[in-house]
Each structure stands twice: as C-alpha cells, then as structure tokens.
Image (cartoon, rainbow, N blue to C red; front, side, top):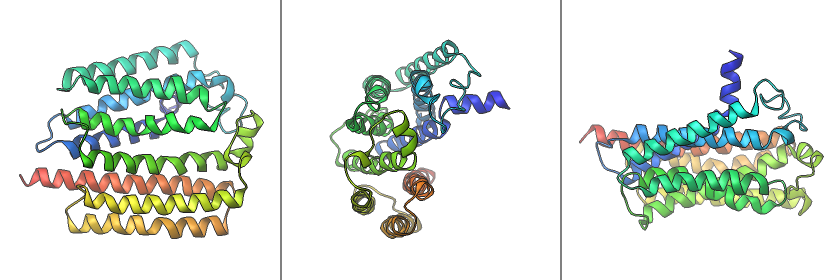
Length: 291
C-alpha cells in the first residue's frame, strides 16, 4: 500500500486526473458522436500530466524537504530514488506522446503536449521560486489539456467555443494559485518564495479574490451561450453552481480568513470546476447516446 500511495503522490494523481478530465471535455466539445478515441486521448493526457508531475517532484525535492507540508513526500523522505522517478517521468511522457501521435489526426496535438510539459517543468517550476509572474506559464500550462483534447479531433483553433472554454479554465486557475499560496504562506516564506501578501495587504487580497470569484461565476454562466449543456437539469446545475461562488467566497473570507478557510476555498473552487466539466461531459455523452 505504501508503494501505491507513493506512486499516486509522485504523479500528483488529482492534478493528472483533472488534466485527463479537461482533455476529455476538449475532445467532446470539439468532436461529434460517436466520439471515437475520446477515452484514449484522455488517458494519453493523463500519462503526460503524470510524467510532468513526476519530473516536478524530482526538480522540487530539495525545496520540498524544507517545508512541513511536503517534507513527507516520497523523494524528500528518501523512500524512492530520484533516478527511478526520472525514469518513470520519461516513460509516462513518451507513452502519452506516442499515444497522441498514433491516435490523433492532428500531429499538432503532440506538439501541444510537449508545450505543456515545457511550460510546467522548464518555466513554471523554476520561476515559482523567484517571481509571482510564474503564474503566467502556470495558467498557460493549465489550459493545455483542454486544448490537446480539442485539437486531437482535428478541429481548428479559431472556434469561439474553444476560446470561451479556454477563458473559463484560465479564469478558474488564477485564484486557485493565490489560495494555495495564502493557505501555506508560512511554508513558502520559510524557503523565501514570494507570495501575494508580500505585495498587497490581506484585506486587499480578499477583495481581489472576491472580484475574481465573481468573474469566474460570470464566465461560467457565459459558457452556457457557447455550446454549453442542452439538458435542462444540467443547465440548472451549471447556473446554481455559478451563482453560489460569490456568496461562498464572501462568507468564507469574512468569517474564516485563515489557512483552513483558504484551503476550503481552494477545494471548493476545484469542485466548482469539476461540476462544470462534468455537466458538459454528461451532456455530450447523452447526445451521443441518442444519435
């Protein structure tokens, strides 16, 4: 069981799974029934994301050893060796890339996969230790799984629906980064990583977070107008999910502006994204089942 837990930690399973989920949405949003290859494309993106996360663990092992939150991870705790994790990362990235190359009618999907790995491991990972501008390649990397799923169908990249959904993913990720930094501020400060509170006050950060959460709610509602779910119950779910975001953020920031409150909002924001993605995917599968 320890080996399984360590493996899931090394590949950052929640991030890799979410990436596959986003790629599946991209494929279904761009394609048409019967969506042949959707599941395998998502699996390839999972492999790419898992490989990039494994490589990130190797890159961050010295830093992780200095922070209580990450010190028990497999590499800083020396339960596994760096060269073994590096080999796993190379295998997963190669497997995901080869799978996309074999399945996709658009070779550019493989290039997009390499671009995602480059953004995450070559730009975001080293830059996050030096500047808050690391957020830019971080967000760019975060929207890549959806883009890979989209172009894996052979669809063009100038569709309004594509850019609308990419905007949704980008807007979701920015407060996601801020909340993580706020929740673990002492860990980051201990290793001299700059956080947003080094630039503005916490009360000002609360206002920014609320406004961004409200913006995310608006973008979520707009998703209904560029090819969102058609099923009435799923439309209602997306609307209620979006409308709940601003009051939840307002209440939590007012009542509990501590590490636990920030962690709650972090997980809540992830849940709202899963609800939206899930609604789109279920709707597409329902349409496919009826054709």
